[in-house]
Image 1 (cartoon, rainbow, N blue to C red):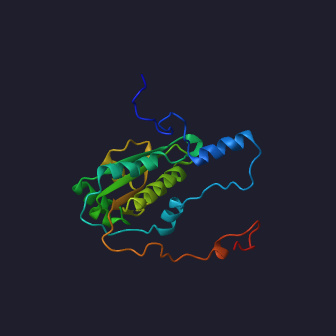
Image 2 (tube, one colour):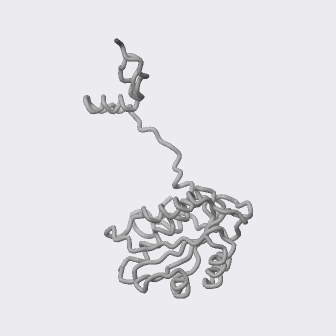
Image 3 (cartoon, one colour):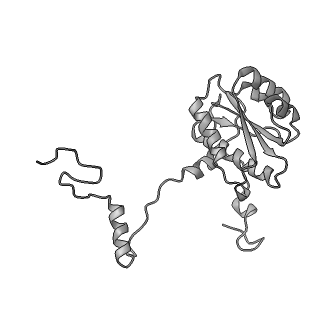
Length: 213
């Protein structure tokens, strides 16, 4: 008696494999000489687009950022590379309105934290030789991930945030590097409009002074 089960993905009704074209091309390349005409398909570089368009956001809508989005932002920090995979950091997520107001009063360069939907206190282990570098990388991961979700942010503070450390109950072994507020932008932003020096001024080819076009 013949089975009436539906065909599995990659098979027709007769049970024959119908692998995608790129898989078949891969198999052929393994069993024969490379075809110089084969080209790997390209896709839009979403990471570059986030870097190209991200802007500092200091004004936020009075609107919550969903928990799953906040968690994904912090997950991006957790997944960031670190020196020797030491991961010398800790991230404290703050969402309570009164606590955000207090953080805004504790960070001289970040009073607008008070109006954010959430903020992440970024701390690093004092004993780590590369703690500042690693935590900075994690911050950029969060900022870019948030931007891709339509959430704005900005770096506030830079060390000397003992009051913040006490507020969130960090152990003595940690130093707070920064507090990053997050929220949906209150105003329309000119995405990608940046005042940056030209490539020829900031990058050289092979040796300093030879402009990179």
